[in-house]
Amino acid sequence: MIRVGSVFIGFMFLFLPSFLHSTNIEADFSVEFGIVGEVGKVHATLISDTHSYVLDANVSTQGIAKAVTHNLKERHISRGMWSRGCCVQICIK
Image (cartoon, rainbow, N blue to C red; front, side, top):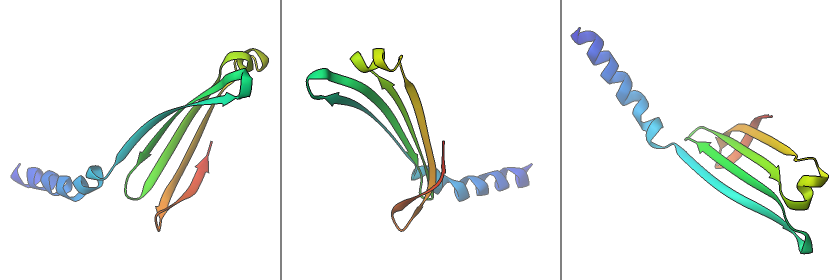
């Protein structure tokens, strides 16, 4: 029983630093077009740690654009890894 507990604690200390450096950022954007006004909204979430990231953006139309596009809604997901401080995309959905 002591051996299992010490292994568990060892794994905890091994993986704990990766959890300490994770980041979760959420942002909301609105898109306006001249006199038409607001035509869209975006809710974006960035989940990142020291090695990889996931960017999830939910896009929806507003105002007159909503009527023209029949209430268009889209979701874009980008997954990748960090290389020398830059994002390198692995998968885009």
